[in-house]
Length: 258
Image (cartoon, rainbow, N blue to C red; front, top):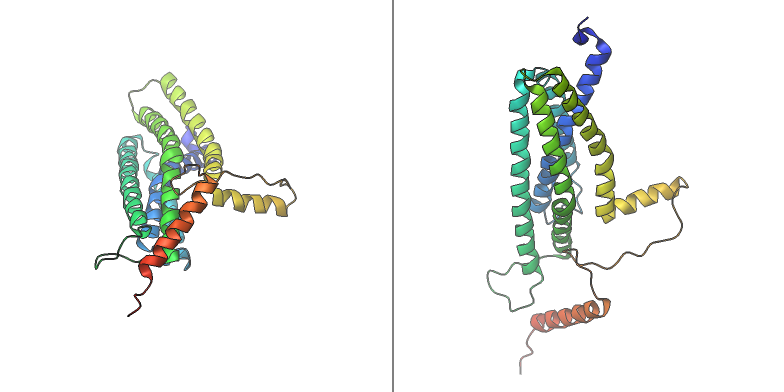
């Protein structure tokens, strides 16, 4: 009996392919979302653009469903994996450029020197969005990218090895075990890593757990960190804030005619 004639086996195979391909496309989608946040820096947080999320989810699901048809043919597996690997490498490069660009805009928005014709004035909303972009990109780079990169490499190798027609059944079974293990670890660990790294996500989950009665009532005090993730000294931070406020006030104060 051919296993491909069994509907149960084919269904599980499609679910596995959908999960693997969708997981390998998460990183480019996250970076693409930060591209929209950087472009619409003036009103991205205030004016929620739901079409961005819907578009990215639609693209992610479309790639996953279409891959179920192509990946089942072993001759196409290597090419699809190479394309996905290229997309992830390109996402890493874009992440670095976005982080550099937002850091430059952050420096400009917090400069208190004399204004010039080329000086760009940022509103409080824009400053917040620039800070949010830097923090999100830093979390993606320091934690999620390394974890996803390791998992993607293992997924790529196992999928490519299982896609070769010359491979022995024993080695193909080993590749299948590695692939299934990667999928299990990938899907179960990614959400916990994002929750640990993203403060906003932790707050939302904490609120949900408290509503259903599973959250702890004791509040944990997190250390005060700056935009770039470094722990801040409260006394120095307060002094710096008032110094910056005084310099901004003095530089923007109009001159009184004699």
